[in-house]
Length: 338
Ligand code: SAM
Ligand code: MD0
Ligand code: SF4
Image (cartoon, rainbow, N blue to C red; front, top):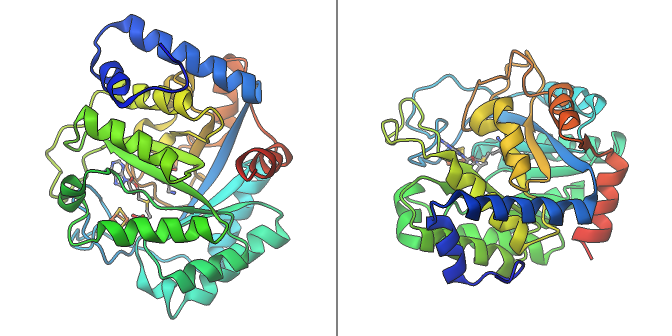
């Protein structure tokens, strides 16, 4: 088996195999690759979901427009205070996320840009923006304000399935926003959802597409059913699938950032994802902030489970540690941007 260059058929075979020896070998190889590239370092991102308003109606999402939930918009001061607390706790980057909230793309765009600029310039910390699909002009301004990364997940690269998940949204418009950001010099993150009706062939196509479009961060999250959404009663998938996808991503893209998202299973899901080959912890959230996660909007947030301290403790038991911000910045500039 050629370890770093799986064909579509091999990917499908690994995904479909029920032999534990196949996943063990995949994960071992993934850990070996990670450790060769970055030793005992694991990166960590702070997550600030500063507006939960959204104009879209994604079938899987708690924050979809038609869900009658309580929503918030945080002010510039509040968002910056959360970001600062996360930075002081030791995260390597701040991920500024919103629902597709037109207010922050138009009238209140200055607020968004100010938050990015302050974190980047005054706090000396890299920034990822996850605002959904925005115009090229907004992407330009976010980049000029200092955003290093644009995160926008297709969820699947099967257009029919995309249409069933991201109701009323245009596949190409979403993809093109991402490609525009890449071409204008930003790093991009691509992502897929596991357990939303995709086939193993669809997953293989997503994995290969991530490489073709030059995504430097590649994510998979297991679907978690959301109250009040059309997929509320769909089942959450067995995590073995997400873990194998993480292992495959690491094998295919040795240098990529591959998240272990605390959003799916909280802090208790960290170890398995790191063992599968992830090299980045995402969704570190300031405790008692009233901020939300995405897939598990509240799990572990207020009790302090999603903190650097907790993550460090778990990594320590595995002989790993959180990378310093300097180490992250060097990795971004010397490995990912090369
Ligand atoms: N609104 C922006 C967007 O959709 O691009 C930014 C928000 S981004 C944090 C939302 C991402 O969270 C989705 O792209 C999806 O991958 C993930 N997500 C949302 N609902 C989820 C669920 N129920 N289970 C797992 N992941 C979910
Ligand atoms: C996470 N909840 O990292 C966040 C989110 C958005 N860029 C990321 C899905 O798990
Ligand atoms: Fe809105 Fe993003 Fe949720 Fe879709 S995934 S409903 S765009 S917040």
